[in-house]
Image (cartoon, rainbow, N blue to C red; front, side):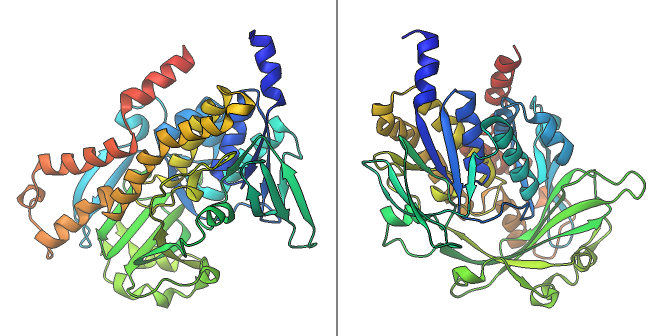
Length: 429
């Protein structure tokens, strides 16, 4: 088949993406770049920049760069310079450079999740058309053999039947399509920990582009800036997450993202005042505090069912450890787009199975590594060995042990510098 005929044929293929989050929007852009027609449906009636901060690793930034989005990312995000691990006494345990400072040809970005989603949404509407995303339509059920999906508009009560050659479920941890294939799975698996998330306007700490993890397995702070400093005041929007162990059952779904008062969680952090960061003041500087249970789901035996497959949090929800949720969704999208582009319409179920064979074991390993605290495990090592602090870090753990903890997780999540850089060299080349 000639290239010209191949492009025309691919344009005749129709893919429907359920969910206009980071994974679904990234997939739409990647399919468009491969001359494959697609559209998206989103249950939320109005797409708005919700959420707080996330990190996008260089492996995903490379993919977004190849979509021509690097300048847009740089305009709203912060190029992360380093990640640092501190004890609850404010003592540095381990730090390492990130992004370009670590030798990657592209940055790691600390960015507001909602701003990233809006950036991707704008690109989708520019390239695929203003009507590429249909908001307010919730997936009800799907026929994986026929490629038919029933959609419900809850505002009007209208139901629609849509057909596509392939249907991608990118509708998050509470995915309706995942639930159809696994009706006995039940609610998300609660970790026994709760997160409180907020943003505060204040002076950035350390390098001004540092990502900090402090505490231990049962009490932790994660914080980093997600906006450029103000030209005069020098203040940035600082993202932070407070985490505490809260045994028992997780809150029901309708309580997720619940707004609470500062008194609910701030007490255990009252003494966390260090020369480089005043944690209680950081907490007080926020206007709203939102509560999230830390949950994930067990890895599935399969994602693909006929003309339907899962992507992102619908496929592999994981604890927010190691900055990998959004990154892995983007990497899913790249592999899936490549498999779709290399297939005929009749062979899409096989393409979905090849995508699954590549991505399911990798993401399952990350889910399980995050349950073991991922790279944050180093904090628990120091809490157990030196609960009252230390004089010299290597009295507690050798340099080799610290390096092994960091390197082990990088290997699991695919943060190999040469692989990312080779891809960027080929793209630039």
